[in-house]
Length: 421
Image (cartoon, rainbow, N blue to C red; front, side, top):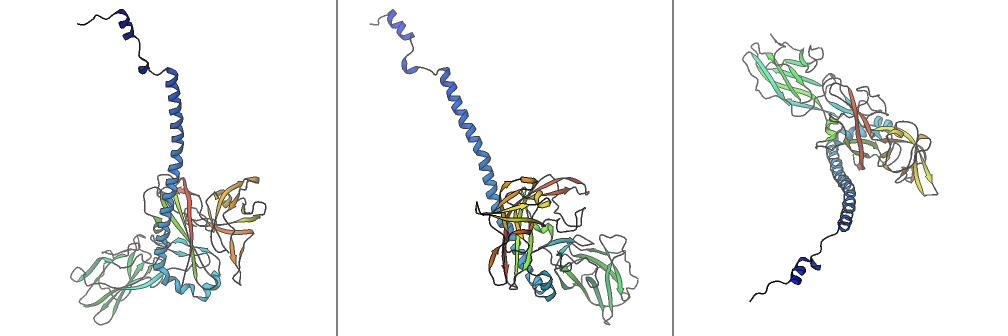
């Protein structure tokens, strides 16, 4: 038998139970504040994590870029060997460090090795290519696309840099050479330098693509029989100095490398590879080449620059410091910049900014610049020192040659190696 609920029971049902109590407004606010503090702290960690991740990626890529430079240089050592054992080169180079410029040739897009003391130190080799008998035509033989096995072709237009030799059955020779006065400078065309071309049409398939080593030419048979067609040329073994080959082919961020070399006192070759990352505006990256686009043709311009600073030993803090002067290095230096003493042994790094007194910043060095005397004893270099370094900012240009901004460069690593010649 069911009993009707009493008034006491109804009031008890209406009262909230202790276990079902809700949150107060104060509790909600306190929880929100604690959560906000936690999120702010977590957000503050993200930039540091991203920066560390980028630094790790940079170091990994820089190591790979340095290895690429080593591989390219290793394949070019035979061409360097003869020059580094030349008494004249030995006398002029001494044991100082020298940068490698990529001096652009007067014609075409090829670059070649050039140093301040050895402007003719060009890495090029002679080659001979026997053209297969694939000429088209009857009385007029056309060779519209002869691809030479090595590239690029030397473009200095010196005698013997490029010539096509057609030998007839009677041993007479028809010789073609580049026509430096051809109406169209790029590409150049051939002209007859020796022999009888017959009723030759110079407007036929006649062109020279220096960068890709592709040539085209034609001649009249005039009842004669061809014995052989040979191309003699000098090819630029320039991949260690060509700026397009010194840029690492990755998406942004992108990387590049520069090279300095010297001949050591014991006659070996030593080289330092500087690797940097470049960021900036949405434009093709064009390294500075002295003498081009208004860039001064001196050691204070280019992708590996030379400038002076004063090295000081601070006995109080037991550290070596770099006092810059007013000049390009004072404007370009920042923590992490690598400095290669021209008369020293290995590169050193600027660690941190100490002061900016008198407008000339002073930096702590990770170690002193060193040199080795005639007795083989290594000692620190103090006082005024000349350094090679990669700039941290260079001008950016449009394809039309207009200055449109600044490229930002971040030096990453500098490695020094020695090779036997």
